Length: 386
Image (cartoon, rainbow, N blue to C red; front, side, top):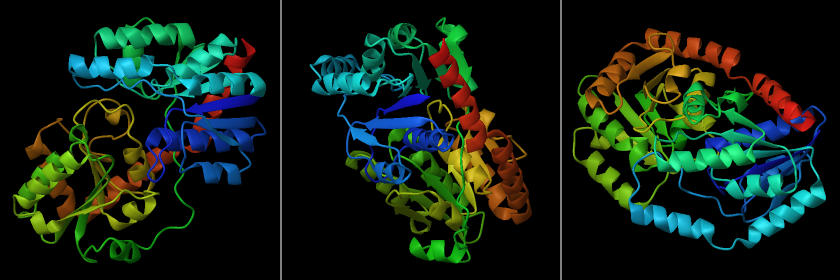
């Protein structure tokens, strides 16, 4: 097949899970002999590795629609985002022309905000597979996006059962295929002491990691609060937080860290181009997202790296972490639960090792790149052949 893959984001230094998943899919499809071309809306940190694999990447600055956030949005913010999206978008014309010239058999649209991509493809009569990686709350915004999906997608790929659930509630279930992401750990392990030295971490500490965007709903404040409760229970317990976010939240996080006994044990570092060095440095991984997380890649990568996971049980997280087998699930927002789970694992290296090994097996069996590409290839072929 000739396949066009459209990315709604172009992160320069720390690509999101959605971007990494698209890049893995592009390389997997190209390795099977498909003719793959990719577009991204700006200078993209993953473009080089795709081009090195022989996959052309075209920069086309198309404006996404940022009305997909789960939490409540004030009317003024919804209006501002809606107006920004409604303004004339020259990039949409360029994308339309590129798709016309490329003439793919099928167009893959990565993520719900890329409304322009789906619209351009459908206007040319091209079949569209739309990959939905977002959770949407009940209400007008969800109905509005569902209407666009109904008009713009031949097939819809849901990244998890949790995402499939809301799509089904909006009457789109007959078009939905659930395809979990895939993850490929590096062939060569990174030395633990080397990784710890890189981030200034004590070589003999028990270290808990949290990796992702530093914004309020990702729960870094909850981890800091749990750290203050846990450090008195476990000797040499440290925390590594890697990410970036708006300055206002960074100040809130700094204040929370400073306001307790774990102040000297919480290390905050910038986001890294790859997560594997971070994972090599830690003993377990926490994921404390307060809003439903569709299928967090940080958990998948932690499992593939043999690390146990402590996470808030929302969204697609229970599809990944098996409580009492690969990690511990906690009630969202319950900092005491989170602290207890961290203390339990930090005190028991044998339990950590068993959970980590079980998570690694589960990642191989349920979240392999090969399996992901198999499923996506089938969906794309069905759409192209219909």
